[in-house]
Image (cartoon, rainbow, N blue to C red; front, side):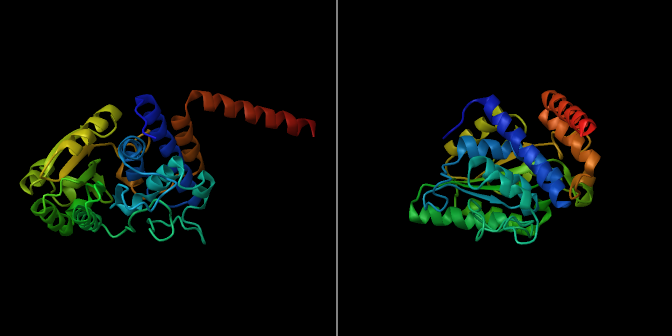
Length: 294
């Protein structure tokens, strides 16, 4: 079911962020920063844009999504659980022995995952192949691929971009999670990456710049991409690493670090809001009273 209500999509994005924090905390490992920055993008894609059915995860005519920055798997898992591909309780097993929710997505063992990813730079090549195959088979499906901005340091990204342009893949929509940070710091300082818009334009893409945390703007950008003919599209979504958790926002150190207990509590309080804080305080007070009587 397509959701068009902006507030509802914002709520879903917030739920995704809460589940990201829960997963990384429970596992005591993972990559919260880039997962949090992509939550709004995933909310719009899975609940407003993509032609998918959680009850038919292998439908040949479904749209496909590739999380090329596979280390941000908590965001994808939270989205799939929110959509109903599997029970939310499963998220508690993230990165634990015997769980299919590995640190990087596994298409063979997780319903809703269209491609196994992890090694950066490879997802776009697969997306290009899928887009070509869809055109050859006349399936009419669209292919979406989410890249990290640090990831586009990889040369394979640009080889795939050339192939996408040459083959006029207007059924391919690339999204760049442009939060400006990678594991070693600012993207322009690590590899001197600048003028991203100009680079993709020169490689033959239609370029759309958008606020990656504005649901309405994201919907408009994806709608524009669908209407674009003859060329692939890239949506450069300006985001904030660690979005939604104040002490994580804009901090490269949260690229791949789990919160400690006090940090976890603060993060959840910020995401769930004042009502949840009041409820939790009441629960603690009730617990104290019960213990005092026992």
